[in-house]
Length: 127
Image (cartoon, rainbow, N blue to C red; front, side, top):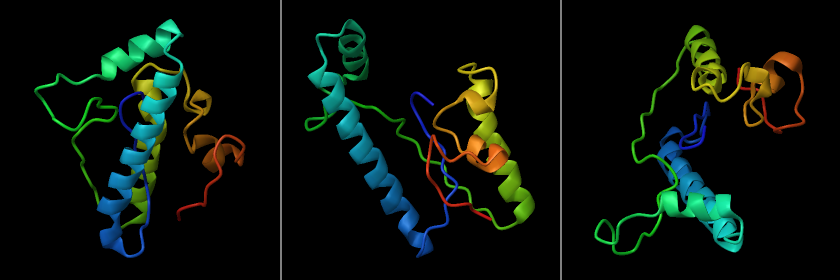
């Protein structure tokens, strides 16, 4: 998704979820902003960097916001709920009209789970 992501993870220990999410968002945001800044000669990169810019009065130490601020954890305890959440994740880019079918979204685990294709993303199966 352009401004958020969904993860279905099993952290060990369970309380590591918050720290994992913080680090993932922080590191990816830094890399995205750096890549856009390096390619400001490209009009699309320049426009995206401008779109991510924060007003100076909002934060004294932050200049950009890549990811949504909110975080909604949801604990999954049953196989049925796991499959429900997995289906939701896979249908999200289709619902957002970014692709016509979930197998076309390159950052999805759909191809891994349903087509046994791990070429777009390498991952472990969560059962």
